[in-house]
Length: 144
Image (cartoon, rainbow, N blue to C red; front, top):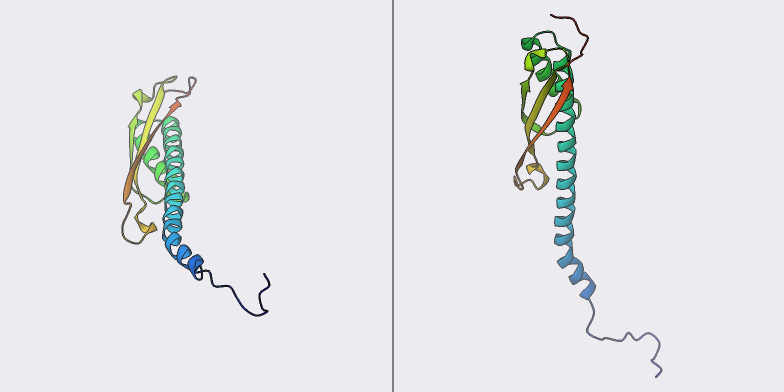
């Protein structure tokens, strides 16, 4: 069958690609937001883990328990701040064991990660994160 030049066949499919795009776009945007949220969550977990390790190490180097607590808080807050974490209300719980030579110091760092700014509506909200880390007190260190 030869068609005359310049005639376009009308099979009722005109504009269906635009309709499909309009219907699929919100789903693609939602998938993108979920991927970004999961990426932020993974990053926040790594940052909290690093803050716990730094807090434990800083506390294990201190000479007194009061100094250990202050150093652990300072190290954890600095690690969270330098990483640009969206963590609010950071907390450090410390178990020093008296800072006895050869002992260990345990630091548990926790915070609340804010994921709500992804959509501008406050959804999906906040996620609580926590991580524990241990650091050995030097066996050969002198008494305070």
